[in-house]
Every structure is written in C-alpha cells, then in structure tokens.
Length: 468
Image 1 (tube, rainbow, N blue to C red):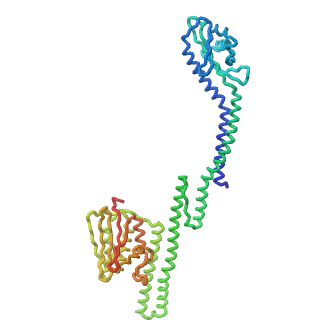
Image 2 (image 1 turned 180 degrees about the vertical axis):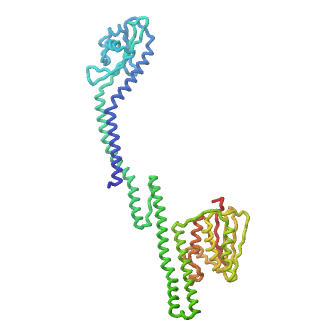
Image 3 (image 1 turned 90 degrees about the vertical axis):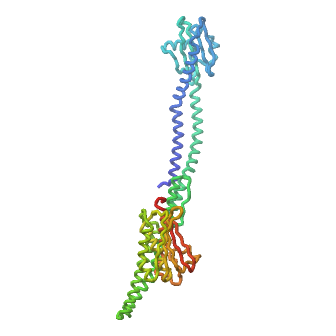
C-alpha cells in the first residue's frame, strides 16, 4: 500500500508536468492560428480607418503616396500611379506583390476588401496584405487604392525561439514543481501521519496523548474531536478503575461481616433466638448498606463517564422540596429532630432541570443534614430568589460543622468528616459527589458554608425556566 505522502507527491508532480505539456501543445497547435487571426484583425481595422480618411480625396493625375501608420507601411495610389512607381521607391519596404500585381489580384478576387497572407521569395517570410479601392464615380480610372503590407517576419524562427524558451522554462518548472510538490505533500501528509501515530498510542490505552494543533481546518477539527474523545476515554477509564477499586475495597467489609455472622448463627446462636435475631439483623443491615453502596457507585460511574441521561423539563422546586421533606419527617421525629421550610415567594419562577436527578440531590443534602444534626435539633430548608432571578435552595443543620480546610474536599468521593469511624453515619461516602455531578450537569452553582460547632449550610442555585 502506497504512503499518502508519496501518493500526494506523485499527484502534484503529474499535475505540474501536465500543465507544461498543455503549454507545449498550445504552442504547437494553436499558436500560429491565433497569431494569424490577431494580425488579420489588426490590419483590417487599420485599413478600414485609413480608407475612411481617404475616401473623399480625388486626384486627376497619376499618384503614389507612401507613409507609415502605427509603424506599418501604407501606400495610396491610383492605376496610373501604380504603373509609374519607381523601382527604388518600391524596394524601400519588402513587398511580395507590388502595387500593379496587387491591383490585378484585387480585381480578380471580386471582393470589396482584399486581405490575405502572401509569401515572397524567402519561404519563411510571410506578409499580411490588405487592399481596397476607393471608387471615384466621376472618373473610375482615377480611383484610389489603399494598399497595406505588414511583414510577419520569420514565423519558423519565432517557433524555434519559443520552443527553446519553453524547453528551458519547462525543465525549470518541472524541477521546481517536483521540489514544491514534495514539500506540499509533506505538509499535507505529516499531520495525518502524526494523527495516525498518536491514535495508535490511544488505541493501546495511552490516554495522556494529546493531538497537536494544525493549520489545515479539516485536520484541526479531527484533532479537536480526537482530543475530546481522549478526555472522555480517560474519564471512563478512571471511573472504571475507581469502580473496580471501590467494589473490591468497600464490599470486602460487609461481605466479611455477613459471612462472619452467618457462621456465628450456624455455630453459636442457632438455638438462641435472641442472639440469632440480632445476628440476622446485622446481616440484613450490611446487605442493605452493600446494596446502597452498589447503587451509588454505579450512579457515580455514569456521572463521571458522562453517560447519565437527563430528562430536562420545567419543574417546581417548592413542590419537590415538600415531597423530599415529607420523606424524612417521620425518621427525624423519632430522633427528636424537626424539619422546617422557610419559603420566600417574591419573584419566584419555575426552574429547568431533571426532576428525578434534582430530587436525588435534595435527598442527599437533606439526608446529610439529618445525620449530622444534634438530637432535638432543627433542620431548616430555605428557598429564595436572587436579584438576577435565580432560585436558591439551601439546607441548614445544627451539627458539628466542617473544618475550614475540609470545605473543598467535602464534595470528594468517600470523604467523611469523622475519619475514625467512617461508617458511623451509615452513608456510602458518595452522596455529595453524586450531588455535585448532577448539579454540574445542570449548570447550577453550588457550595457549602460552615462554622465548626454551629452547623453547615449546603446550597445550590438554578436558573429559571426563562433564562435557560
């Protein structure tokens, strides 16, 4: 299979040689005809102009006048003047016919205007002869003749000179064409070769490869597309690795406990109903926690890889907040906690988003607030509008708060406030990471404010439906 660079080089070189060949073909086939046609038209226009100028001039005696018009010899004579032309005067300019022989040929042609090519005794010398009669109605024998002879020179010599020049120009042009076509082919093929090499590295799993910028628009678009694909593949690969690491690490503990308590039931507590029920309860809790962890890991993986599907529509944050608050209200009352909703109505408008995903964000933030609130504490949910018309949703707890150095890390995967007992809260460690990914996909702003010992406020802001 031929390389692109060699193929492109060959195309450019063949094209250049074809152009030179067309120039040779034009010179060989069309040059003479075009040259004759142009000269005939030029002499014909000149003769007609002179005829108009002399058509009212009358002479009764023999006359023969010679002058130059645009450096071309012109004769004006009548029949008597043509017979008495001096031999010295006639030989001053090359003339294949002479005045009298021209009159003979003119009258024999029967044409009003005689224009033709004539040769003299030198085979390579040609002339364009133009002539016409300016009739004198009073005395026809004294009618004037306009006679123009334009030497074409040696056309054969001109052809030889042109061929020599074309040969020299052709050789130089072909050499330049071959050299230029090589560099042009190199400039076109190099980006494609570079893209192919880097794409091969990408196919081998090297996601650190980056495709360069190029001056060719189409290749640059391909490069940008490959860079985007590389970034997405890198995220998917990272998500896959994190998923495998998470599954292997996080499932080990609950599986170990399930196995341990199952063995305890078999060996120790099978006959003791109270202990057996306690062990079964622990097995069920670990199974529920493991199921929740797998669900969160899969959802987090879809968010990180960009494969999460969103069904965007107009939604009411207030109504959605009531649904989420009702879901948590019974559980909070059992622990002496309460949920209050502060609703500020002025300027409120519906927002644009995926109802199920935003509900997931609310559930995660509200669940986080319930877990870290003190006993008999109050959890406040507040909905307000900014001056720009955005809707702000926030939840405040009265828990231990977050240290300032952890405010940025709180959204990271598996981050926990209590390092000594990471599973004390019963969460999977992915809730805030999932919430961040969903909000980022909606183009929403989000954040957290916290004072250690006083509690935390998690919030997000969404554009209204009219501003989307």
